[in-house]
Length: 157
Ligand SMILES: [Zn+2]
Image (tube, rainbow, N blue to C red):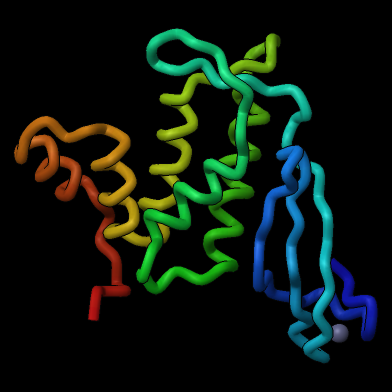
């Protein structure tokens, strides 16, 4: 993105919102050079997209659920708005690439995409999401999951 003030291309995302209609991502950005704040609107989500739930029901895709799910998982973790934004973008891109010709994707796949992204960023956030998502039935499943985590250097203080 080019800064409207000084034309620099370095910026950071300070806030991400998804429109009520669910098809546009609005990003508040700040220029890394002059500090100018500006907003971009990006249409990245297919207007027509359905989620097939585990019980087989088909519902409208709600991208804000991805954002709020990631936010909840990252609650009080050292994860920046920029990182959350990148995760939402990565998940959205994968959904648009992997939906079928009827614009459908399973809720299971979406959950896996979110877990893939969280795993790269913060292991606590990942475990939070995974434990809710996968409904760990026993301690063993949980331990296996933890052992499969990549080693990270940003340890909990
Ligand atoms: Zn600037």
